[in-house]
Image 1 (tube, rainbow, N blue to C red):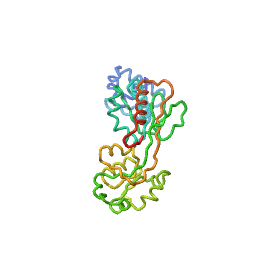
Image 2 (cartoon, rainbow, N blue to C red):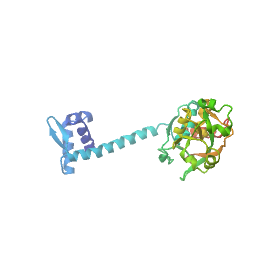
Image 3 (cartoon, rainbow, N blue to C red):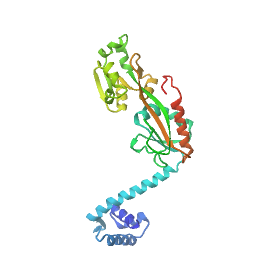
Image 4 (cartoon, rainbow, N blue to C red):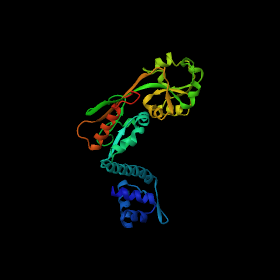
Length: 294
């Protein structure tokens, strides 16, 4: 490792003397390290140019591997530093739920749990709950992982909403004539989803589709921009509904949506903050909202 660190510094700086200064060594020590490295490899990694050096082909190949390894080690040291921060709690949560449900509650969460520093990730490929990478996970079904405590957190529903800009077009118009006034924006998978397919086939088939999305966050953004009525998960839209930017339309079907589960490791956590955040999220999820959605 000592030889490789000296090699990396000399290659990056293009000069043995500068590498020696950076590593607090003598130039002769760096030169000796490079000689030993070249002896082990059986070929030169540098060629001299003027007062400096440049890499040979072998040196360029070696540098790529060495820099990757050093970056991995530095990242590992950084992760250890973060892990030692007792306020850090890593939560993996699908982006739409993170945006629509948790983000509006963040100020209250931080106020009620001083010293907490949540690391919020929507990378669901990294939701394996362990003692280093993930402390808590919110998912639409229990995780297939032993040694977890898993609890239902929230139940969602699909609803029809209208942006404020389109409400004047619907004033005094019977619900069976809404499709003559405005278009509909929706999720692509809603046409075939077990819970929603019947709604589109029986109730919404007459609407002109203004836009179709495969990401719920884009659907919410389109609704807020007034592109059409939107049939979407209520938890995603609840903050906009509370702000008066979106409005629930009565008379349209409401169908059961996903049930979200929260998971943590069984037993004593590495930090009390993990338990505190877990319990806080459960209380928020189990407290009845004005809408009746839990």
